[in-house]
Length: 150
Image 1 (cartoon, rainbow, N blue to C red):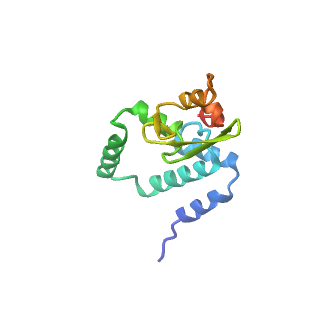
Image 2: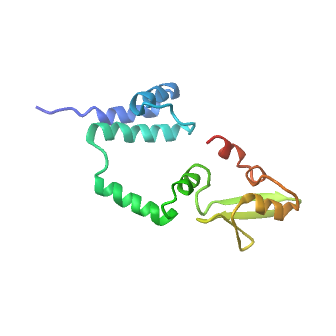
Image 3: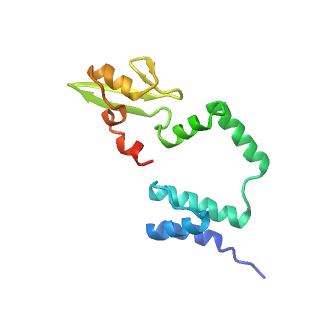
């Protein structure tokens, strides 16, 4: 007798499930309100959670190893790691803004940003250097919705 595993079919169905239904599944599986992320995020987290509940989660030693790797990146500062995850664009991202006919390229680094070969802690400092006036850096570089939505 062959047993049929329903999990692969359930995972495949996520792609065609209406977003409202994905949010309903989120509430059932996570016992919380779904985050304000895009549909792909909901699908991937739901897929992981479905598999986790059916087959078990990560082994404790794997969780410890991931936590150690995370601490190497952020020094164990939970607030700093959350800011990076929730607000910062991915390291290496190039932000391009034209100002008065000049194109300015900012690169996201692990510690902040780089513009014209110099490190900066904030986008606002770069926007101020470019324009000579106070700006919200997230607004200046067109990232305001990215930051506010989280």
